Image (cartoon, rainbow, N blue to C red; front, top):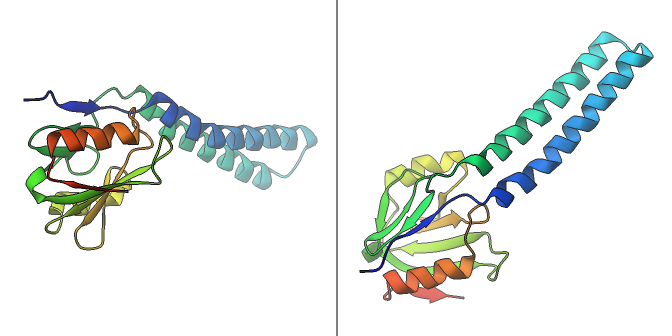
Length: 169
């Protein structure tokens, strides 16, 4: 029996997307300071300060995942489990096929075609916009760009754990 594959967040997959909001927040903050120094009206400076704070908070929210070392996705001989989306086991017996979207190192999604509709936990957890997301009646997408694994490594793991699953290109 093969050891399970446990996948965590990628620090660079979380820090790099946070750079934009931090930069924008810094620019708005600098603009607010310039407004105060120039004697601008308090209402305008307040709005710019609030925009700055919102952008900085968004950047911190995105970057916090870089410090989360918990297991996000597990693949084993029974099936796969995405802790970001309902933490429910999807048995390999319910998976018909899978496809690596866009292929190669820059792939961002794995698409799993199931034999039946995904469990309710996955459909309800899709509202958080991370992890597994239902698409159509029997397809779920697994976001992998923020994880510390390459798409091809996941394809290889699926071939190892579930040789009956058809891998589409």
